[in-house]
Length: 164
Image (cartoon, rainbow, N blue to C red; front, top):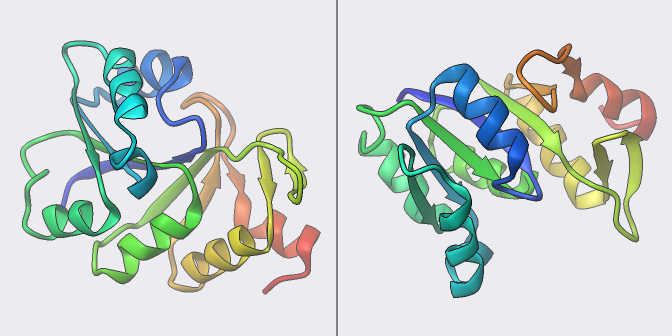
């Protein structure tokens, strides 16, 4: 399954995605994997307006994106799976999709979250999901843009949250 990039970014599609990631790794398909976005007509419309016409966009429920990936639907594309949270990534992995690395690009601070890095704030649910992903042998790296230095997010969580 040639999913080029699996990224967590709670803002989903925005300038860093379009100007940074799409161009750097020549993505031609974005799959937004989010039950909330798939069920929100206004958000779907806004996401569609944010993507260049040269890039195909799908907004899928977690179960449907998993099924499509397992059936090879994305094999002919350079695909980015874009998530708003780590729990949905974990669900896709537990559904059997082979993911080697997860890029954390933006999990911003809100009430109830602890800020670990400038672009990484987590609550207990996030920590649990990221820890489970890491324990499955999957790299969790943090970068806002492709040229940024990679940060080992699992190590930051272990150090800052005392979770192993």
